Length: 352
Image (cartoon, rainbow, N blue to C red; front, side):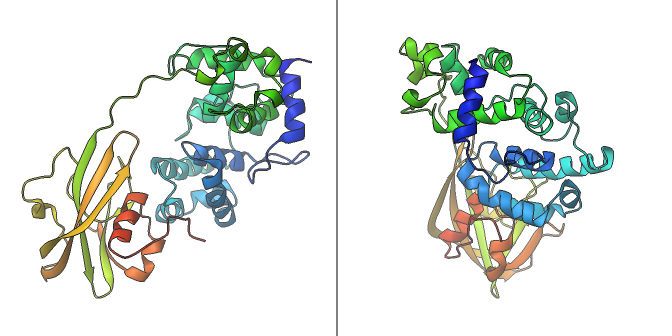
């Protein structure tokens, strides 16, 4: 049996049962493949399952999602992280509806022209949803291929070679199953630590295992020190409500709601109160919130205020939200931590 045949035989026995995965004999829905792949970027399967089910229940097809209000999409995404994905998801749904008649294109090039779809996601959709012979190489697949062929070139430089080696293995039939089988193999057998080599369908052919280097593959670029940024969040309660501010649509946490704060920088600004959303008597609380983003760590002190004079600035980005309704707002995880530090605990789980 070829490598592909052995992998598919293993997959037929041991495939994972995932809510977005079509069962044997079922038609594959490109919308569900796309939605799951966007959600799974930088996020675990365990976390994504609940979000995915809620999205499908609320927006069963791409047209429904295209017609949704962005605020509702961001609220449903809150807690999932990497919020540019949610904005791109919404933009992509609108473009598919407006320019493609609600039908997903099937080629990798056409898919990559859509918002938020990169080479891996395009390959995954093309293979899984349309049976195209494409190399869907995610982090799990990179690890499997690097070990199988004992590729010691460090990432990210190894990516083109890993992709080429993976594509050479893709069969002309069942390319979608092969893509999902490769993902499953990396997620359940060829894991980063304590790989289950004795039950792997590719053990006999694994060059990394034979050379005794499998456990250190793939080789990753040495991590650089993560910078620390600091800021002050301004918590304001008034008549059972809290003041929130909408972040700019572009950039980090774009379009999400937040507790107003100073800029996040290496040092706290001189006279931080000048960044406060209104004039008040500010008192530093004991709360300090720490949160890790992809490229930096954030430390936020929290100042609390009783309103003295005036309201928030004009411009429409500020809203007073009842404390009881805070859970339903599009608050990113770092802002949910701020609320929890102030005795309000909006859940990080997606709204039902």
